[in-house]
Every structure is written in C-alpha cells, then in structure tokens.
Amino acid sequence: MAKLVKHDEGEVFDIELEENILKANEDAAAKNRDLLRKHGVKAIDIMGSIGSGKTSLIELIVQKLKGKYRIAVFNGDLTTTIDADRVARHGVEVVQINTGKECHLDANLIAKALDGTNLDKLDLIIIENVGNLICPGEFRLGADERLVVISVTEGPYMVLKHPFIFMEADVVVINKIDLSQAMGVEFEKLRNDVNKVNAKARVVGTSCRTGTGISEVVEALQIDNLRRQ
Amino acid sequence: MHELSMANSIIETVLNEANKRNAKSVLEVNLVIGKFAMLGTEQLRYCYRLLVKGTPLEKSKLRIEGEEGRVRCEACNFEGPIHLEQEPEYHIMYPTLQCPKCGGTVEMVAGRNCFIRSVKLRA
Image 1 (tube, rainbow over the protein chains, first blue to last red):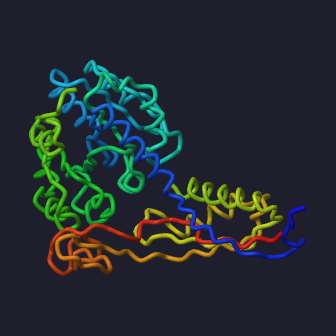
Image 2 (cartoon, rainbow over the protein chains, first blue to last red; image 1 turned 90 degrees about the vertical axis):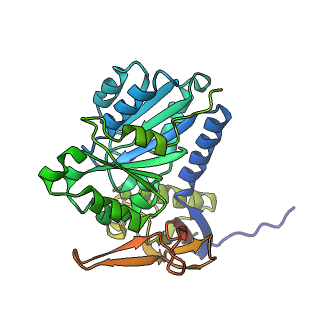
Image 3 (cartoon, chains in turn orange, cyan; image 1 turned 180 degrees about the vertical axis):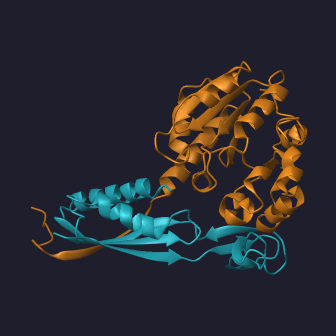
C-alpha cells in the first residue's frame, strides 16, 4: 500500500500559490481576440466618462460606415436598453450587455455576447463600455483598438486625474469641442496632457453635434479600409 | 471600484485551495497588488472583511504587498521604474509612458498585477 503523508490535525502549513486574479480576464480576452481574428472581424472598445458622448460617437461612426461594412454594436450599461435602442435606430445589430452592478465590461461578458452573434456576417464590432474612467482600463476585452472619450464639459483635469486609462488608449477623442469656448477649456491643453501620459495615443477633437472630426476618428481607428472577407 | 468582485475572486481561489488540502481554516492570505492596478487596498480590505464572515477565512490575516511599476523601452532597451511627471500648477504627479532615457514610448512590464502569492492554512 502506498505510503500516505498528510498534515496532522491543527498543523499549520504555507502554500505558494502565485495565482493571478486578473489573469482569468486576460486569458478570456486573448480567446475573444483569436475568435474575432479567425472570423476576420475587427473590434473596437469605446471607453470614456459618463455623458462624454460615447453613444453619440458610435451613432456617427455607424452612420458613416454602415453602407460599407456589416456592423454590430455591443452596449454595456448597468441597466436599461436606452443606448441600445438609440443605436438600433440606425439599422445595425445591437446587443445590450447589462452588468448589473459592475463598473466595467469584462472579457467573459464579451465572450457571451460573441457567442450569440453570427461572426461570419460581420466586419466590425463596436463595444461601448460602461461610463467610467477607472475600471474599464483594467479589463481588456480582446478588441483590436481601445478608444477613450472625454469632453471639454468635464473640465480641464480629466486626463491628469485618470492617467491609467489613457495609458491603455490607442485613440483618445476629446468631444464637444464646439463648447470649448463657453467652457473655457482648451482642446490643445487636453491634447498635451494625453501626449504627456501616452505619446503613442492618437488624439482627435470632435463635436458629435456638428459631425466635426468623425472622419479623423474612423481613420485613427483604422476602420476606414477594412478588408472584406 | 471593482474591489468587491476582486475580493470575491480572491476568497473563492483561497477556499478552493483550502478545500483541496482539507484545511480547516485559513490563517493568512498574502496578496501582491501592483501600484498601477485600479484597486484600492483600503476598499479591498473592507470588502474582504465583509465577505469572509462565516467562512474558514473569517480570522485570516490579509497582507498586501505593493508591486512597483516597471517599464521597458523597445527603442533604447531602458528598463526601470515608471517615470512620474510633476504638474506644479495642479500640485499633482502623474505617471507617463515616456522613456526617461530616450523620450520614446515605453511598455509597462510590472505594476498592474494582482495575485495571491501564498496562503497559510491550518489542517
């Protein structure tokens, strides 16, 4: 009979775990990315503050590209389908992801949404994250590009007060520049702040009300010339 | 802001480990949290205390070690601490992805982790 060694009652022992709590999300994100690549679908993660204009920006991108590509939009919010209903008016497939109480989308929720989506019939997925300049930065979803939206109406300190999410960004959109003068907040100041934190991020000023800058956003995201399958 | 769910994952992982090894209680949980992870240690401790009630972790000590941020520059091979910029106008310091040596853009190689280094169990 094999010899059995076990701890005595009450014995104290140390276990080295090295168990990475965030790794589960990184692994799920990598899976999402592989799945999207396999089907030739490009995905964009749109993060940003509450009320900065994430949904408006998505509506304008969808309007601009819907004749050219097959697009789906995943809308992340704690509750309601308000954003999803807004985007659905443009005639593209929309999935509302309600997180309940969570402050961010995670790769597992995206995997679930992808599971119910026919990827062979899509070229582009735009994911609207929960409005928040903190937590979404930590949880990658498997998207090709990460975009952060802020607006001049939030004041001049948004970038320097939340540097981490801007470090994650490939593209930063500064929205509502038509209100810049009224707010006394300069686009250039915010752009310089982004450049200081993350010089690699491309910064675009937009006004979703007038449509200014939308072409530049599309170009910065490299979705103006997607390869059709 | 997601400290509650993180505390929950930590407790679940430790409970699994304790069950696997037939431990009766958990005495200590040693965590490493990157200084650039979006986790507040005060909130995490608070959530941990709320969630361990009535579990084998109830009396456990939660030790948290901070992991310093480190960056690497592909252009000049610099590797070292993350560069902090001062903004005297607003009296704040903020991290940047600028290489302190060549001014290029660096990648973060450490400082965003959150892992359980070890646990102390009682059989």
